[in-house]
View 1 (cartoon, rainbow, N blue to C red):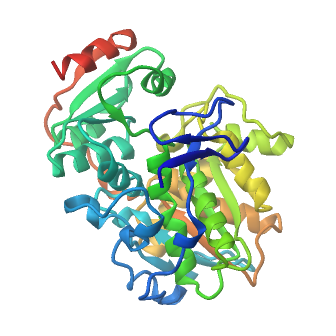
View 2: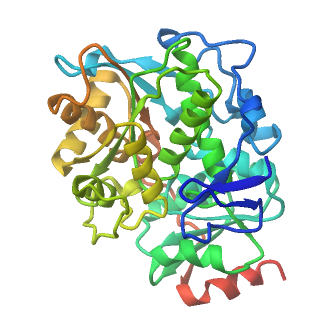
Length: 399
């Protein structure tokens, strides 16, 4: 698995040669269809959850890295629970995929684990939340240096969580949205594992492998998940394509994506019937982790929805906040508002007729709410820096 391919134009590249396709779209790893199979231990069924899953490395044959040791070896293998207490009236059967049980409390550990297993030297990321925490923790566990670039308005409570793993932590002034492109375009001496990098997408696709294996010999009728950059949606689509091509699932689940209405560029493109996502001017939202006005893999996520006859839903601020409380009170599950948009979207999709009463729907709850419940203690060690000074500051770390 050393070749990357563009989902859109089909161009291929050796791994490490290009960060994105010449057409501008993101790349993902090609997978040998002969490598796709269910592990010998088999699935336990949707009602049994993921009790039979050890970690995402049960699917090592379709991953571009060997099983690591330490923290990265524990990523994946999260529970899949039936949730009748929050099922909408006349709605589908809900099965919640609890990604908050990953080592650092979010789905980001899947992509970080694969990236750590393949990349050498210092590792970095552009993130102000779950991905920053994941990269910092995994780098610490592997004895590696981490470079974390966060937005200027990142709360001190989040910085404290990240800083406990002792990364090089930079709060960047200026156009934070451009930092993603900066880390692709410049040689900074650090391997950046950003939101939709091929290694991250390869790790994140395993959540769909786990979901489909739990439903063997069938598959759920639909998979619903929140979306920000589009990397997680890309991973889910990639997994479903691989499983269908290998004949391990007969029907491909429909993919439904959920965004906060205050920042919903992919939903707007879907409503227009467009094939390309345009940047928006987003508003502040409690769904901070998915507040992405210009998603780098937005076009690929939109293509996933169209290819599977799914849809993209926008969830109002009142609805996502109410859903966050409802999940805690009625299902005993603490999530971020960025996760709650997914189950809130199920209600809207049920009312619109997209999801039916006799269907099984897997909802990916991407992260835990517990870690954001209380402010971190102490003052984190963080350097204030202008965006144009980032290259020199990062290179300085290796001299």
